[in-house]
Image (tube, rainbow, N blue to C red; front, side):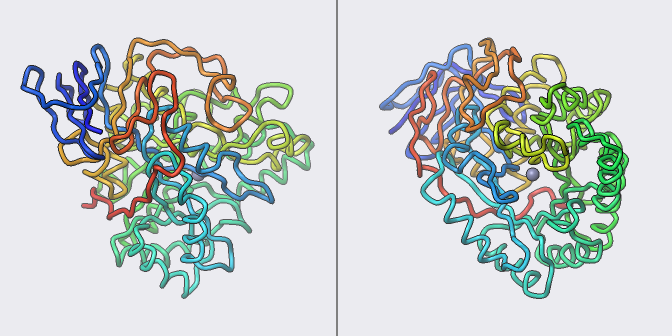
Amino acid sequence: MSILITGGTVVTASGTLDADVVVGSEKIVAVLPRGATVPETERVIDATGKYVLPGGIDVHTHMEMPFGGTSSVDTFETGTRAAAWGGTTTIVDFAVQAKGTSLLATLDKWHAKADGNCAIDYGFHMIVSDVNDTTLKEMDACISAGVNSFKMFMAYPGVFYATDGEILLAMQQAARSGATVMMHAENGIAIDQLVAQALAAGHTDPVYHGLTRPPELEGEATSRAITLAAVAACPLYIVHLSARQALAAVAEARDTGQNVFAETCPQYLYLSLDDLARPDFEGAKFVASPPLRPKDHQDSLWRGLRTNDLSVVSTDHCPFCFKDGKELGRGDFSKIPNGMPGVEHRMDLLHQGVVAGQLSLPRWVEVASTTPARMFGLYPRKGVIAAGSDADIVIYDPQARQTLSAATHHMNVDYSAYEGLEITGRVVTTLSRGRVVIDDGQYLGSTGHGTFLARGLNQYLL
Ligand SMILES: [Zn+2]
């Protein structure tokens, strides 16, 4: 169906423009300055007083991720639908290699989970948890299959943890192909000692999840990852950066011209250690790693977003219900499933940054859509409103008011990390490849509309 979106303000990473957008089958056909002659279309959407944005791209989600015998509670079906409600039209999710299995078998498994189930388009990163000769060779096959970003962990000894030597080997392999290594940078060896000490002292409440993962150990691991990447000449992307110390390490590396990039997440911009300290085990709702930090880290992160030392905001969406999920850690904070829900609220929460004067309008679009597209090889198919790009478009009402709540959100989880938060701005319409998926409070999409995106290489490499 052809659609004309008229009367709105088109916002892109480079500025705003009063323009009409013409959508044909799946693609944007034209962006016409206001007043230009527009073609006849089957449908006209009046976007007067609204923003017209490229659809959001969330490059860090964990749908139905296996975790200690259970799974994160959003499936690809429910999670991508919730994303669409919030103006996100592409996710890049993590396929998780279990130790002793192959990367390609892992990729097949994740295709089977997502294929035919997604409301919006999706791609994959690969979590490498078992570095050996076979795995290293398989990295190239993953790249050919459209998966060219490999995540590794300096945390979680015995599960995902990789030694510095293993990280170096994987980085050298990635570097040969121009692929990017993504890093969970926390010193898990030291953290495990602090966790054991806390539990031995009878400190079992959720706040100790934060206190046993101090920001210094994120800063140290980030520096070490940067050093290893420099030695291997490998592009490095730090995931879910939360601490000022880690940001300083990234900024320093970027100043020297190293291919180092970083993302943060809304929870680190809006929530803090105080939330982890909420009484009656409620703090468990906020357990994720790295942990929420003391409030004074938030200003540094906003500044990092403005200076581009933080280039992307993703969610690390990894929801576990409070009941029967988070509650597994009553009496032992180390048993609380790690992860928070968020895929639905990223665009809105970042718009609050625009309302509060922390981000400009174009920068909002840049960190939420355009840069993620370029960082992970999806641009210009995604991340921009331009002729020839996929018609992934969000019509956003910047004046609307809404209150975030588990009672009204669409994620398959029984609590909201932002319960009761009043915000300004709301998605009115979401288009995914030319199809109206959300319109005026109604879901009009379909399971299986979303297709797999084979991605190219990082487009920012120096
Ligand atoms: Zn994650």
